[in-house]
Length: 376
Ligand code: TRP
Image 1 (cartoon, rainbow, N blue to C red):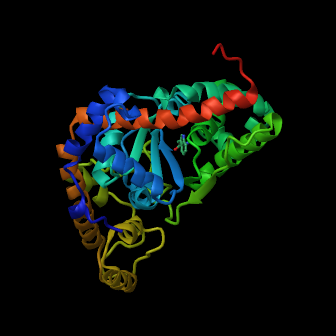
Image 2 (cartoon, helix red, strand yellow):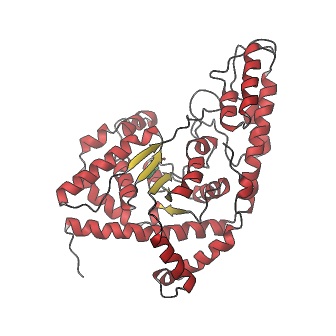
Image 3 (cartoon, rainbow, N blue to C red):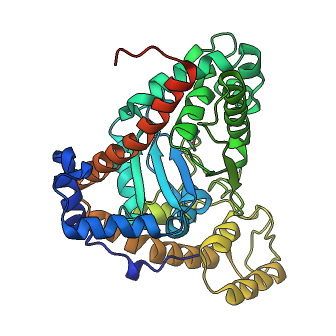
């Protein structure tokens, strides 16, 4: 599961600089200052087989952790080679549950880049800076009923979890509509996500069908969800999945001391008191992390056998896990140390600029289909 971090190009900032400069003069994107090389590059792109387009996104509610790595980040590192990948920082969506903190945007960008999501292959975009999303969401509001929104299983679950009871905000109830705008506006074919996002994609596709029928138009496309084949990473307390709100996650940016503390406080087998006693693997957090992060699978099966038989202590397996997580995190953190805030902002700004062009194409078609008045 490890990435070959040694192959990673950490000299992206020089290459990206070129794009950033272009971003300050957007007209160069429109071809006025095209060099021969630019033209060659463009004709090459046209000739190549069209890759499927992916949109994924995260709310900037905190730094990313190992659960995000297992569940989505490693998949994005892979998918960027076979797909046209867009990664959205969904800051508007984080307003709907009051988890919004603008300083998290930079941290998340650093998380993305340091694990190997490559800005040369992936387009990063900031939701709030895509103007057509506000407009698209407004049009879609007329294609869903309140009842349908209230029946969305993920929303129902979140209402319970967050204890909203009778004080459900309209913005919260409608965030699936805004997410539909994210997905359809970029014309995504595929949305890689966890099971909890299935209702969001269903609702998106219902909106697409309703739009097509009501306005007799085919300018929107339905998207497909691609479920992760990795089981959710458990929290260090073993109670549920790793999550920021439960304070039971190991962050990509945790230093050695914190990592050690977290690994050594992991839930194992409460009945495994003495080294010589047989221990349980099932529900043992150390082993579920080893399953995800320990590369030598053969050695891991031996360790499990020994643990089950008795004779292998918790301290020993925790030490092994600590070492392998340290080996996994160190190269990521070394890259992170080299990342400059201003480069993160340029990458995001540049990507948002490019994504805006795509969203703009959709909104033009949508306005035409609905018959929105135009002064032009
Ligand atoms: N709902 C997603 C989450 O909570 C974030 C998100 C917003 C998203 N817009 C998206 C995911 C579009 C995929 C596609 O994590």
